[in-house]
Image (cartoon, rainbow, N blue to C red):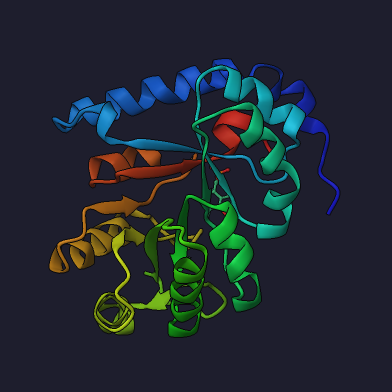
Length: 231
Ligand SMILES: *Cc1c(COP(=O)(O)O)cnc(C)c1O
């Protein structure tokens, strides 16, 4: 899909500046609730942006990046990873079983475990490749029909199944609240489910709501447009 060029005149002219602003806002939101900004992992979501556009953000010390498509990430990240040691790549988009092998090979964290078949495929590939990406279960907190994520009703059982039957080490939960709703209730619901299971990781909050997410316990925020400009 061709991308609009409007961002060329916008925030993208200085993504490192935008990155600094986002980091400051993280610190402030964390301090406002007695947390440390260091406890929050900023994932810079670089989907649709080219290696050349990602480079200045890497050069400013950002090491955690998020992509939503395996294929797109496979095209641009191996080269960048070779140049920048320590890059951590997070898969934040829906995963098909036929991409599980590529995903396990390329990504350091997968935020979108959301059904038994994909969890089984990931477990198989982890054993085969000897790689251990960090894993998050995506919960469809709004129970939206078109959205990925395990339903709220099935979440408890799915998390237990991943751990017990598949012996997967689950780091936390992830959600994408419905666009049209106040995200607060969704962030709280995700935190509640995580607490029930003793899970520490909460991947929640995007450009429009990461400060609220931090106040409600986010450990990983996924921020795209506030760093890279509009897509
Ligand atoms: C694109 C995307 C983001 C980043 O969205 P912004 O609003 O640009 O910050 C975060 N999470 C997921 C799952 C995404 O697909």
